[in-house]
Image 1: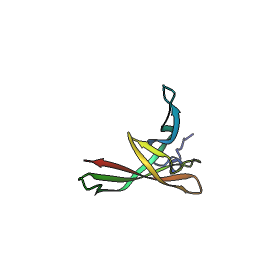
Image 2 (image 1 turned 60 degrees about the horizontal axis):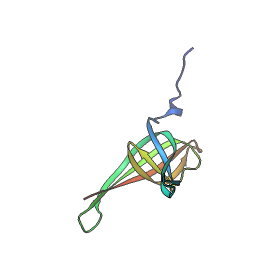
Image 3 (image 1 turned 135 degrees about the vertical axis):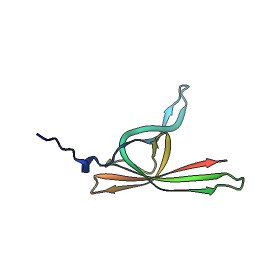
Length: 116
């Protein structure tokens, strides 16, 4: 018997990403602190359609912005209030777009970095 792989189903989901949400937790001293916590880790197809650099302020600080698209299997509950951690870098979610009759999600995101 020949075993076939369904490449259409698996696609190019070759990169591991972590979707995070902001939450308030208690510090060791008992005070509430707000930070990012892991919601889930999923496999994704990652593409970078564009990037740009611009002057951030009058002191000569430049900022760079990178746009990214993360395609994942469809999952309920992903919102623009969340972020994605990918290869140690965080990306702010700007849009969550269901695709293919809710079989997958396209998550549009951006990363902004400041350089002095």
